[in-house]
Image (cartoon, rainbow, N blue to C red; front, side, top):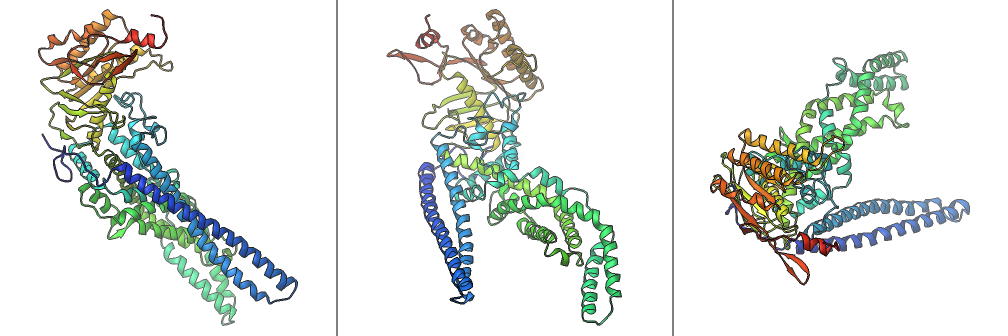
Length: 612
């Protein structure tokens, strides 16, 4: 057994923050709200002052130009004041926008802590795959999902990293590194705030896939020697024009240079246009990405994963954000040639050709690294998302993990991570080679399906690198197969029962392939008659257990619970109970040994007004 210890201390030890996340968020929200209000007052005051300054300038213009009572030089004073106020006004506006984003960030953070987060975040719908063996059944994506609770990512790369970690258990070394990174990032609230408040346009604008593709395009080269010839021709144009103006030489040398430049321009025109057409969007998006890169470059880290990510932002001692700034400068200079006032000067200087060549040289050197830069930002964002969850769930612990090929799931106080901490009821779960199956019976709404999702989601969290909502958890690297929410499909001409048995076959295939498997089956084969259900369910469960899989099966059919003795100690019955109090059905959601002895179906139907 390998212990997933991260950052020192016992891996199961509870985390004790300096202050409760809710109090910390309220304090920071109040500070940002105060700042926002002060900036808003200043913004309006400067705006009003600009209006009065403009009116004063008009009045001075009227009496100086129209009435000739005072000198027009008096216009310099209000003009200078107006210009300075415009500069200050623009700066205050940027600060006001940043304060508004900070308010939004902490309002959503408080919504997560206070369980008001459902429907407010990114739900990861683009990562949903109905054929995945547990994602839909365990609510990994969608409204109110694990992804929506976790994701604070600003880029598509960050969301993809997070989604991939939730869809498949990582390798042991990777997960241990993530745990150490999450531990290090857990208390870095200011860093997460800075990354979250750098502008909403980053989420919408930065397409990391397109950036990587642009960086790896085949080079748009001009003819050999063009980068040397272009500045020489530009210098020749300046010199011959100067000598012609000063009458030091005639017009012939100038005309020769102009003809040479025209020929040069024809030769490089296509390459120059390709560069100009391709670079606009990538340069703008890289400029936005550079904001994130520059913030990360200012940090120092000790955990291996974070140190590796930080190192990936450097090459030959040069920082990624600085190199991107150079590209942005080159593109701005290239675009200057489109200015109608500068175009006449740009043409003889071969301005566009020179900067197009410089842009292409930049891309040849740094383009292959763009994919690595965006991936580093994405991975860092995903780690920050897990760290944010870790910070907001102080009682969550890092699990002990094993990838030795054994099958084990041992939990104390295991709770559903999507249920608020104050409301979640923890239960103990113990499955391994010697106890492979629990059949969970209980009445409607007693907690059976919630238990299955709690087991599955905490395994997902643990092998993603996040802490789990339990007092203690030991879990091996298991392939999860779940059947909790199979539905029919008109498009695929599949009934609910057919969809269920298709999923069950896929889960069985995991066990047949020899993979350590955790199965989570809810109301097994409920779409068929009781006779076939009993025979089919028993055969399926026996096949999974005999192939070494471990798991839980819920049932309303108490006949299924009778098969436990035939497993020779490898299976056990557990159940949830309810009781009637004052005409209301109450649940304690506590797991107990044995088979449930009563059902609440009739009471529920009567409570809904049905005559039964």
